Each structure stands twice: as C-alpha cells, then as structure tokens.
Image 1 (tube, rainbow, N blue to C red):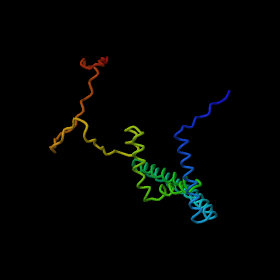
Image 2: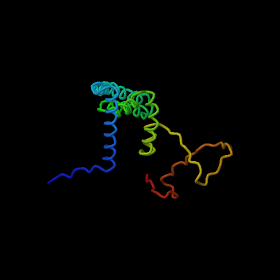
Image 3: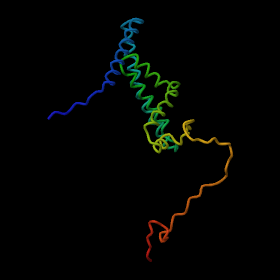
Image 4: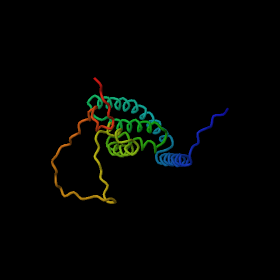
Length: 183
C-alpha cells in the first residue's frame, strides 16, 4: 500500500521559484560587487551570526513570556516580539542575502517594533475575540464609518449603572425551568 504524497500547490511552487531566483540574483550581484570569495564568506558569517542570535533571542523570548505571565500582563506582545526575533535569526541562518535582509528586519529592535503591529493584525484576523483578549489584552474597537444606519452622537452623557437581574428562584412558577425543591 502506497502512502499518497502531499500535493504542493501552484502558488507555493511559483513563490518558491521567485524566491530562489531573487536569492540567486542577489548572490550574483554581491559576488560581482565584492567578489565571489567574499560573498561566500559573508553568507557563512551571517549563518553563524544567525545561529548565535537564535540562542540568545530564544532564551530572551522565553524570559519575556514568563515575566509577562508572572506580572499578570497579556503575553501577546512578548510572544510576537520573541517570534519575530527567532524567525529573523532563522532567516539569517539560511544561505542567501534576501533572507539575510528579511532576517535583519526582524531582529533589529527598530524595525521589529514596526513589524509587531502587522503581525498582531494578522493574528487578529485568524483568532477569535476571546482568545485575542487573553493574548493581547483588551483591544480598541475601530468603528467602521459609512455603509450603515448609524446615528451621530451629539455628545450627551447619560449617567447610569448596569444592574443584573437576580437569578430566578427555583420554586418560582414564572421560571421556565420550574422545579420545586422538596424539603
């Protein structure tokens, strides 16, 4: 009995082909600019740098996650920042200059802080609301303007408080789940 092999989609194959062509073009460009030997040396050095960074960023990501949990803060920002750092370190380990550039964008603190909201929005679209609230904490609701029967608020504040109705008594005949409790 043969096991069916997983099918690789057309989009995946095209994306991989474009990525490999970009890596080859970048390598040829760098080799023409600084020389073949130096470009191979640069790829080896960035691979080693990625390995060293992977160790430190992985440990730092776990430490930030634990600290957020201990402080009672939502762990989402720490997880996203750590995942970007680890992904950037792995990309630095891959041979090629395009992956090195993408890895540096994920590893450097300035550009990582620019990528963090993009990853958070990506996760927000794929996670349900209660999970997002536990992961990132309470979120700001972005109202959608137009395309509905919305009424503009004139700024009037209405004072009040929310009162929950008391639970119905178990021997209340008005209760749909009426059950008499016998002494």
